[in-house]
Structures are given as structure tokens and as C-alpha cells.
Image (cartoon, rainbow, N blue to C red; front, side):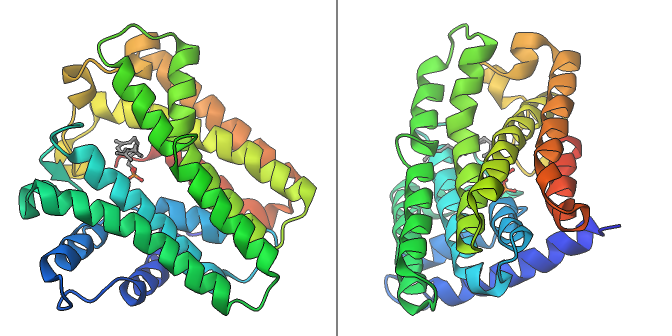
Length: 298
Ligand code: GRG
């Protein structure tokens, strides 16, 4: 039986070491900018996207050490999205990962630049990884393309745009799913696909991982919506009931809390079932992560 807590802690430790090596030092000019980047990256966080990337790589027989820079780049992209999402022009939140948000700690302009610089640093790190790699260049280029697409206007940023446009409006379950597929699901999908492609996945393996990714993203987001209603601010490290305040369409708002719990569980079940093509031992980390997505308290 997998010890998920130990598995997550070990992954986070390796990813944080890679992040430390790939991010500019805090005493290098422009210092305030580099301090803000590090403040947000090292301010906690579950490190789920890098963990999914490493797990997908291992699942298909790849070497997790060799994809650590890819995993670290995904966390940089994710952290940039959190910094920008918290800005006054978007969600205007003061608390993230249990600490003052980047713009509260460093000012709005520096926070915006820290987000910009994290996004570009992610692709600089990916470029270096591709240049130093021993595998085929085409594989590395595919990995970079996956992350760019997952992060951009057909992925996470596009989902954020749709989410902002939906504020204060009635949304059907289908419309809600379409928003979350992009806003939250696209980067999870990119993390899983990037890890699998870098690990040498074949067509059937990649298709199974893509099915898992879609269901994982849905399960994670429904739980996120539920936690906004029933979660504890100290444990979450971010404000609760903010979706309600901002009149955001959420699963509990559209289908009620109980139905939302059922839908999250069903999505997690479909995610684990998608991994049936792999041997049970190898698939265990991703299966456990899908269960965590719907049982987590933060
Ligand atoms: C590019 C501005 C911009 C936004 C993109 C992802 C996103 C849209 C915004 C982040 C804010 C948010 C609450 C998104 C919905 C769910 C989500 C991605 C939560 C945060 O992810 P976790 O729980 O966070 O993995 P940690 O802190 O553990 O890394």
C-alpha cells in the first residue's frame, strides 16, 4: 500500500530543490523582483502539478529525475497564475497559501512582474532542459508545446477569461464544466501529458492518461468549489466563501452541496478506472492522487 503522504513529501522536496536551482537568487538584481518570485514559489503549496508530471513519467517507465526541470517549470507557471489571479484587477485576494498575497507583500506592480517573470522563467528552464537532454529533440519540443498550450488562451488563461465573463451570470452545469476544463483542468492535463511524453509514453498509454487527466481536473475543481463553502480558512490558507461573494458559478451553487460531492466522487472513480490499462502497482500513485483530489481539506 502506497504511503501517499511520504510520496507527496518526497516529490515536493525534489521539486523544491529543482526550483531553487532554476530560480534567480534573491540577492541578484533586480532584487525585489527576485524576492517576490521566490516569496510566492516557496510560500507553501501542495505541488500537485509537478507531482502529477513525475507520477505520469514513472507510470510509463520514464526516469523521474530527468523530468524534474519540467515539473519545476509547471510549478512556476502555476504560481504565476495564482499571483495574477489574486491581483486587485482579478480576485483581489489578500491571503494565499496562508500568507499575504504577493501584491500585498510587494506591491501591485512588482507582483505583476513577478508573475510575468515566473512564466518566462518556466520556459527558459524548459529550453535549457531541452538543450541538455539526451533524448530526441522532438520529444522535448512536444513537452514544451503541451505546457504552452495548457497555460495559454486555449487553456488556463482562456478559462480564466471565461470565468471572469461568467461572474454574476447564471451558468448551466455544462457551461461550468467547460470553464473549469480550461481554467483548472488544462494545466493538470499539460502536467500529466508532459510527464508521460517525456517518459516515452506510447499512444494507448497517453490516451489513458488523457482520460485520467480530464476526470482528475473535474474532481479537483468540484472539491475546490465545495471547500469554498465548507472549508476552513486557516487550513486552506486562502479566504473561504469568496465564490459566493463574487457571485461565481460553482458546483454547489448550481447543483447543491450533496450532489456536488457525488459528482466529485464519480469523477475520481472514472479517473482511477482510466488507469486500468496499467499494472495496479504502477498506477497506484495516480490512483491515490485522484482520491486525494476529492478528500482533501486544503
Ligand atoms: C493566468 C490570471 C491567470 C489565472 C489562471 C489557475 C487560475 C486561472 C487561477 C488560480 C486561482 C484558482 C483559485 C483557481 C481554481 C483552482 C485552483 C487552480 C486552485 C489552486 O491550486 P492548488 O490547490 O494550489 O493546487 P496550491 O497552493 O496547493 O499550489
